Image 1 (tube, rainbow, N blue to C red):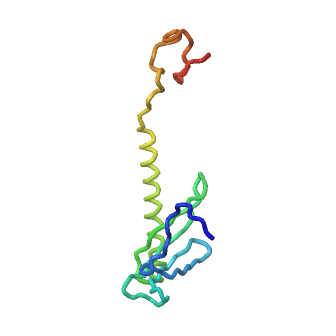
Image 2: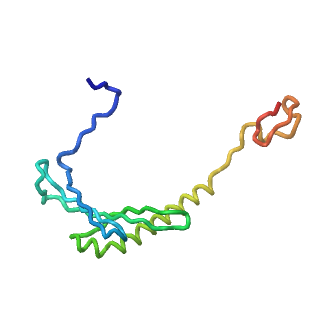
Image 3: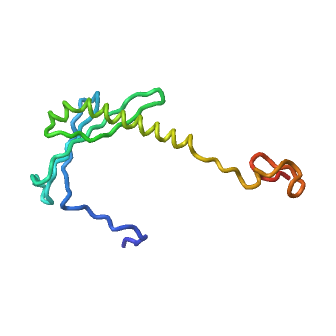
Length: 136
């Protein structure tokens, strides 16, 4: 008998199913084709086939995995558009890294309580460390 640990009831959306196929040249990357299907496994022509790509780039700091959507109408179209999609995904990753760096650099640093109080001897006579804590 399974115990209920307050976990959510997870169910698949039978109206949003896709069959996944993976194509790779084992060198530059992979293309995933997601074909919409019905709950019976038949092709659902009322929804579009989706394509996405994955690759890895070697950078000075290590391997950078990239995943991206490819706006394509067929596998051959996705193969043709793969290089441009990689370039766009890389540019987006670089811009996101720059934004994170800017946000990190612009954070306001708030000193610990007591750090702005004068030097040693104030408020009890003990020396105050640079972190605002009294050393004993």
